[in-house]
Image (tube, rainbow, N blue to C red):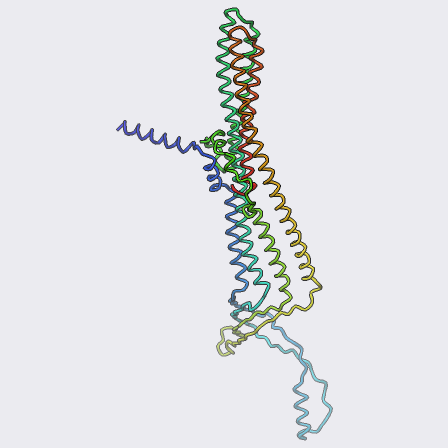
Length: 459
């Protein structure tokens, strides 16, 4: 039983370690970022919002049914002053028929008369619908186009996230590659220090020679400490770009040489035609143009008449005593109609809006041309940088080999007593500089390839 418990404990421990630390390739890091980045989640919410905005706009043209109930109780019944028009009429008939002798009538009296009863209860139901409005049709098209624009914004965000993850990933690789070189140099210096110390104890060299090697070792150890901090910062940046938990460990399964080895001049089509539509920001510019065109047509359509139809049914109850069935009951009424709005003159408001939209359309067209030129320039520069980076890497590789040979020979001569420690130190410094230049050239090659892919829109 105890053995089973121990086995379960180790299985759980292994699972926790596997969960706590992940090793990712560059493509896996990009995929993780695309699945988990908060900016993409926000863009997804904007897409849903745009979808609902289409439904909202559609409702403008859908039939609408409304009902209402209204009750009023008059504490003081409204009344109007009414002149006595009955008495003169009656007297006029009597005078005409000579029922009574004709005489001058007195001035008619004025009395208060009310058409309202104390309790008023009414209910109504109305069905209405938009029959025709050209601006509504264009507005619906614009709402759908806006949904497309939001989707393109999501693609732009994904494009930026990929670029940021690649840059962060590569910055760690170059630091780790430098760390490998520093570790190798520390091993070499430790070995050299031990050998030179033994030679010094034998009395064949001065203490200054030992001190020079010791100083080189201390400087290299200090450089390793700086690189360690730089790598940690790089991982934090990468985790942020991926939306990866900062408190969880992450390692990279690829190194700079692995990525650089995959790049060859044959893979790059330098004469490839530029497809502007691969750039999501270019697609957004074109969608913006279409929105401007719809906005112009929608504003122009407001010169046309619009129509709305309605059907209404209502009943009203007016009584002094609300529950007295001896008084009049509900009085129904029904009506149907068509309301037509004909715009005649608006003080040139629509014309001014159309002129502004027209200018905005011209601006967008100029911006589109400028963006195309910027992409062409970006592609051409990226091609040149890639070619130069490839040539530089080959040249730096030869320099490293030469400096390594010089350092090895200087060290052998020093150990054999025919060379000075100064020559070794100088050769060592040149070797370190050549190694750093080589790693930097490798990084520049990978970075140039990435920039070329970005320029073509291939990431």
